[in-house]
Length: 469
Image (spheres, one colour):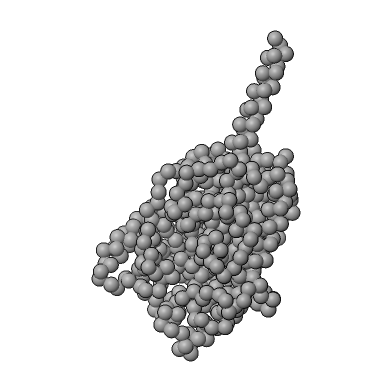
């Protein structure tokens, strides 16, 4: 009888452990930099083939409406790690903190020459620091958390966030459960000039030029450079997938793929338009698992934290501004509106807020004296940026292509995204759309109040409020 009871006990332990492992699946994120949704083949682009990613995408649920809340990296990542909007936690101004300098020296470092005009030092938001990052919560619940390369969240994250950071660790089943982030930076904006002379992997003459750019050889070459960078990235991702399959981890893991914001071109990265904020995103479920999910729902980076916790069977903190769209704590509600924003980019202060519904997008420009084409020194290294600027200054851009450079820009913009996906035909001054304009303006006002948008506070004042100095 004792032997039978012992056997039953062992069996129960095996079952319970099995259930426990099943409730804590591995989650792997494959992230790339600076790529708009429309640039990827599984979102309909026929100018480039990415066989490794396309193969995963065929096994995945491709979401049609994932947005970065900010069209630039560090603020966007701050929303990922916290589940909060950057403008509600003081991480909305680009390069508040230089993480690379802080990681190496423990000091915030000096502003570069271009940024010294701001008159404030680098800083970290104490508001953001007070929020427990979701990888920390995962660690508290038995997960190993790993980030291979990118830790720039625009504030100082807790040492408890990552079990291991910046190494070449390879996982096997004994490491489960784990959460791992792999970031591929070859598609970053800087590669547009660093790899400009590299052999091209696509023919520039066979590419579709988006209607926001003139159709000339320099534009085509720039497009070809980016697609070539994407092809090289795909090869690197292929090696990761081979490793995961070799260790028996591929089938049993959730795999997320996304870009940190829009493409590396002018009027993409740092732009409030869809080209700057709408990103590719898919999720591969563990083999044998699936969920009834609306792939067309509005999603934002603030949703990543609660969703990953939900997948792990952990109830997301109630204060998070995002919602879980997968897992045990999935929120079945649907967003009616999607919000995006932008503030200072490097040495260029600005403030823009935007909201879209199923069809229309409303943009509010708080500093119309600033062109959308902010004179960012970092971006001037790009051949395409210098080319477009020259065409603008010499009056050689068409009316549509010159809209981005307009000074002053309009205080309000309204676009019919269904019929004008590249946002070239502004409807804000059309009386036929006055009701829609007012409706979305009111919705935006309510959101600004709801999240206590800190963009209303001049950065010098904000620095004193949230830095602790």
